[in-house]
Structure formats: C-alpha cells, structure tokens
Image (cartoon, rainbow, N blue to C red; front, top):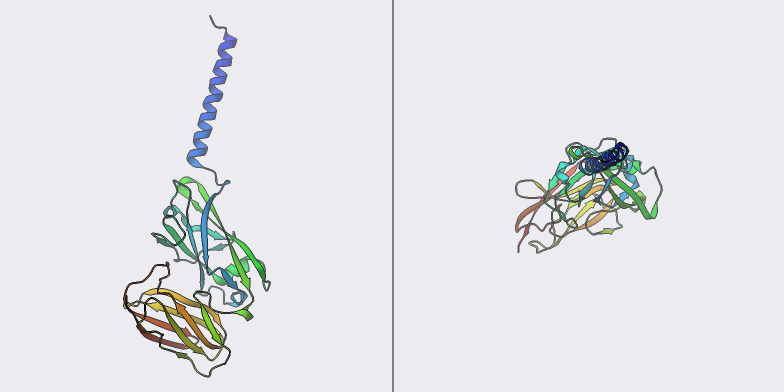
Length: 270
C-alpha cells in the first residue's frame, strides 16, 4: 500500500505538469502583445524630403507603406487598420487602407496604407538634418482576434529640400527657368513598353503627375511632391502603382501644379 506522503508527491507533480501544459496552451493560442512578431514593410517613396515638414497639417499627401510576409497562421486581412502606427505616433490616413493580392517582393497578400508626409518626417525628430546612411522607421499594428502585434522595420533616407526632385521613376532636369506652364506630348507615342513625359514649371510648387485609364481611374502616381521651377522629364515604365504591367490601350496623363491643370492622351501598343 502506497503511503499518503507518496500519493501527495505524485498528486503535486501531476498538478504541476497540468499547469505547465495549460500555460503552454494559453501562450501558443493567445500570444502576447508584449512579444511582437516580425512583418515585412516597404516604404514608398523611401527618400523623404525635409520640405514636407512645412506642408499644411492634414494636407492630403501620403507616403505609402506595404505590409506583408506575416508568420504562418496570420493574415494581413485580420489587421486592425486603426491600430497601425508609424514610429509609434503617426496613424494611417483615414480611408487609405487597401488589401492587395500581392506586391513585388512579398510572398502573399499585402496591406497598403498611407501616412501623412508631414507627420512622417516630423516623427523622426530630425527636422533639418540629413544622413547619407538613412534612418530606421518602424510600423506596428494589432490583430485583435489573436491578441497579436506585428512589428516591421525599414530604412529611409532624408534629404534637404534644396536637392528636391521626383521620387518615383527616373527624371532629368534643365536648369533654365521657363515662363509658362506646359505639359508636352509624351515620347514616343504610341509606345511599348516605356515612354517619357515632359513638363515646364515656371515657379516652385507642389506637383502631381498622374496616369489615368479611359475610365478616369488612377493607374500610377508618377510625381507627388514639391518641385523647383524648370523643365522636367519623367520616365514611365508602363507599370501601375502595384508594380504590374498595364495592358494595351489608351491612357491619359494629367499634370496638376499650382492653379494649372492639363491632360494629354497616349497609347500603349503591345
């Protein structure tokens, strides 16, 4: 017959084993917000101009962030978009969240969000400073249903506004200051698969150069930033905002600068 002392030891051991099993179950099942998981983020553009510090607060002008490559069992579609923060302080722009089937460099679906450019640059706490090495930025967010937090890290560069130039696509500049706004016909036209778009800016100012389809829907934002006066040429590689090649057909490109707006037509033939 086993002694009562031996039974007590066995009972205690059983309770401890059960406690460890249950503890492991709860940690695995519910996770811990204190232990964030890794995610991949891509910031577009990855060069931030210090001129953005001086934009009016709340102006509709964003840097885009692509979030993906979450660990197995987690989906970007489950992310609570209102929980996403840049550098722990900057929330996403309302209504900027878009779920994409994919994006170059990511293994699966991707969540795209926008952050206000002015707030993004100010979140660095480095007004007026410049670094050739760039600065690390973080993006965090929650999946409430799993009590799980992701953490993504990227590196951006900061440049002074005196060095300003288009951040998407390649560009060439003429030093001459021109007296009138002008949007030139793209060349070549028709084109396949690439073309160049040129325009004149008589004054410094904020510029948007947008590619539209025949329904007037945005296909690609080529320029969305402050520009110095001059003659500027932008290269378009025939891809949309998601990095996918567009189909053959008629497209429009629209220039918005100061009080000037002009649209021209071009044709892609494959």
